[in-house]
Amino acid sequence: GKGELIGDLRAAHADAFAAVVDAIPEAVGEVRLETEMLRLWPGMDAREATEPLLARASALIGDGATRLHAGSRGGASDASHFAATIPLTVDGLGPRGGHAHHPDEFVWRDSLRPRAAVALALAAAALEG
Image (cartoon, rainbow, N blue to C red; front, side, top):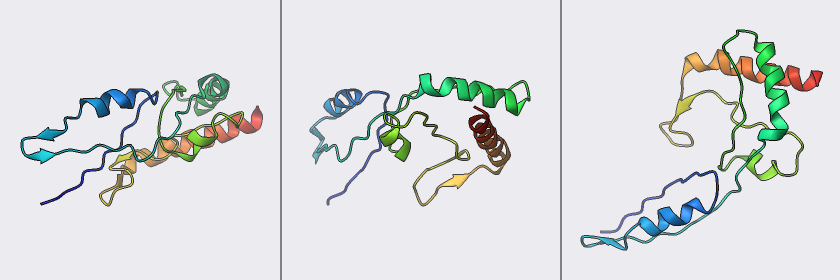
């Protein structure tokens, strides 16, 4: 028989993928394994540019517990492609859940209100700024 397994790898830096690909053996028992990098998206690092906005938005949420912070991430979002050319890029505002981009994808209902509050606070902070 023949089968195919597709993996979605994410890392802060593209050079991290080589070590993963190199660690995959050419065969396991009688099963031959072939690796191929189909796509490579640029990482997004907008920490410096977004920190002031995130601090203002955290204050607007005003619950004393929510502190938004910037992080660097690799990934396939549209924002990753434009982060280097747009002065302010924020990603990751969607609801929480699991199995993204898969038939079993789901959203945790309890994440909708707090995630909406974050998005609204960011919009208000951007309009103030």
